[in-house]
Length: 238
Ligand SMILES: [Mn+2]
Figure 1 (tube, rainbow, N blue to C red):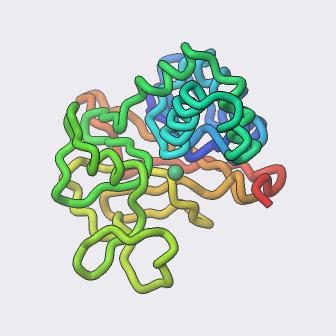
Figure 2: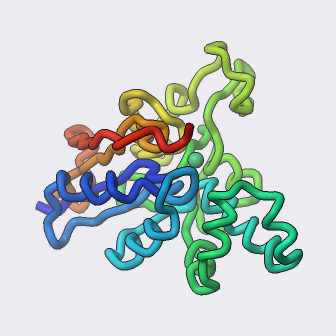
Figure 3: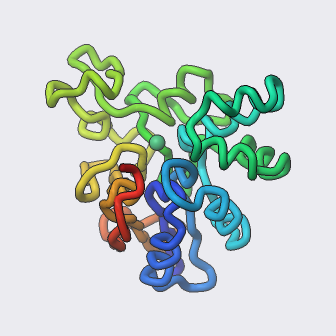
């Protein structure tokens, strides 16, 4: 039976990613997707991009890819002096990335759907309908959303002190079963219509994949997924 495998935020942790792919037991027809944020923060950003391209693994946009695209464009406009103002690991990626690779990043989708399964980077609110021309606000939400306050408004990261609900706890399943990354949890975040698989590899946690079977009907079996993880070799962020 054919499977879909979705990988959590890699953040340049290429060694762990390769180890995880080995552990997943891939068959030739399986579909592989990165949930975004494969770049930045970790040790091998550009190498991870090369590897994903070479292995023909599908990707969606994470906020860190969006950031690299923005930094690169400003570098083209403002030149070398701009690079001095940005973080060293981001500077390194901007200097190494080619124009074609940047085009590839810019072409990445904000979501992928496989029948009843939807893959996004961060989160969505219940009123969002995913389609090919999302407005700016929805694009921002999909790549950044974490918590919602009591009025169901998005809350910036810094305001969270356990007072608000994580979006997936309120999600009612209108866009199918969702796999997402972006927010690091110690263990995968499992809710009724979603699973969050960023387990903080770059922060010394683990890199997680979720594997679903595709039924003969073409529907994805979202009830019986398998979680596979490898531990981070170290904390790369501190
Ligand atoms: Mn992210």
